[in-house]
Length: 154
Image 1: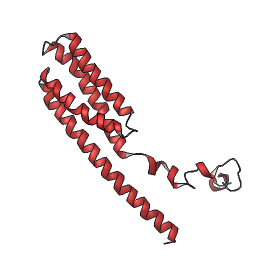
Image 2: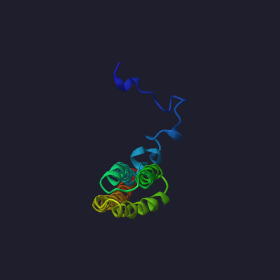
Image 3: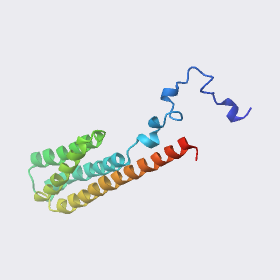
Image 4: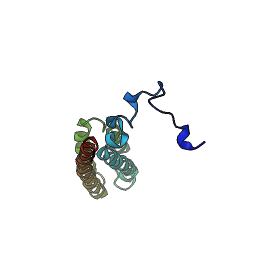
């Protein structure tokens, strides 16, 4: 028996609901619904959280910042980066991501190296945000053209 023979026929199987089958409903296809911008921006924020978190011992040992201040700012900003990365399903979270970038750069007031590190992550954030949006637009156009051609029988 071939593998094709083992596949259930959706029309013959009442347990297969065409309303939730991505092959029958393009709106449920993960290729169409997953956001490259969200993935890219979440990756940047996650890496930024690590960098900002690691700035805490640098602030304490090299910059002689009060440990309570360094812990609250460094780890607090790292936690915010992680929380915003997880909230990127909502459009408002991108605004928070934009606001985190100057905060990371402002850590340079306490540890001068953070001017550079925060600036690098700000550039990465803007690049991920813009490039992800461009990919989403182009992919939506390509899927619309694909659907149009499939419906017209081309």
